[in-house]
Length: 373
Ligand SMILES: Cc1cc2nc3c(=O)[nH]c(=O)nc-3n(C[C@H](O)[C@H](O)[C@H](O)COP(=O)(O)OP(=O)(O)OC[C@H]3O[C@@H](n4cnc5c(N)ncnc54)[C@H](O)[C@@H]3O)c2cc1C
Image (cartoon, rainbow, N blue to C red; front, side, top):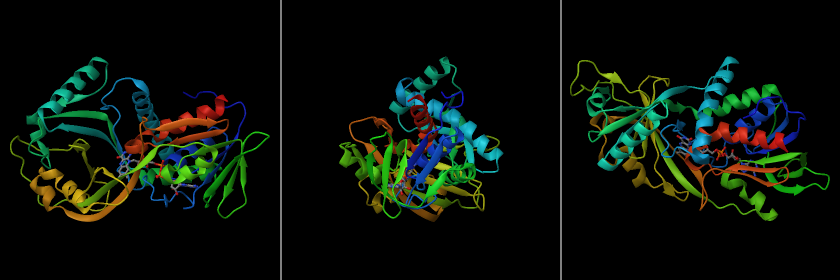
């Protein structure tokens, strides 16, 4: 964890200006470093088929299946940092729509046993997790998939709008002095005096004490000539924005229906209420996992109907928008890849399904590397 200001501000060039790059550039500038941010899409448009703007923004940290190790620590730290950094950004008028709460549903006996065990274990350690039994699940409106056996409710997990988060980090970073260049990095060379030279597709080369490579699979060709071969494979994700039918479904029982407490996760599908979007009845739905980069219409159809478990209201919902993006998955290595490749050269990528969740902890790791050297 970073506390005192850095002794010596450094020059840092961040390659890739989508969520990881924008968040990292912001965090470095906030510590007083001179930061240049390079992305061909200019201010982080994610033009390289990037995942950040396709992401649903679900923050699934507390319900992670493990309770120790690097993955757990990064998740815990990121949840804390998201709370602090959203507060800081919003304090300066940079809005990041977000909502706390996540309800993870069990669809079969094995999953029910796992969630019951997880709840007991986490509650014994002081975490705020609740088990919701079928009667309470039945009181929710709109209705949940009929086969839900139990729900694990986590008030500290939730969801944020990834595109708004990128815009907020960029706008705040630029106002604080981050220099953004709309260009592609095409080559990296170590300088004999220390530091790195970064060749660009269009502009003159840039030099910096440190280079941080975010940018996912598209940025790997930069590293290969230097002998760094990173095992990343593309995994496609598809998503939908739906408008819910206007008639209110009648709950099966109970005096008064309660709204969903946040994101609902069912058999790997995430259902995200977006009452903040126009009309107040929108829902994001996503999470298909498909190897490669071509979307499969059959997978999208299965998602649309929750693999056959969709309640009637969901089947009637109108599709307003459909999109897809690429997740970079490390092969044979745990996600994410946070590595010091050479003196002054950092890699922060391969976040696979949790790049939004893990962006702040990854950015903090970069700051620590730069300041501890
Ligand atoms: C459908 C979908 C849903 C998802 N849902 C979630 C979710 O709910 N929660 C969650 O935590 N995560 C989610 N993810 C994962 C998350 O989106 C990714 O892990 C994360 O966005 C990766 O961010 P990034 O900044 O590393 O990469 P990207 O967003 O892929 O951006 C890479 C950037 O690098 C730039 N770039 C590449 N090469 C170069 C170069 N040579 N020079 C300069 N710039 C370069 C590109 O132009 C691009 O802007 C989802 C992903 C998808 C596809």
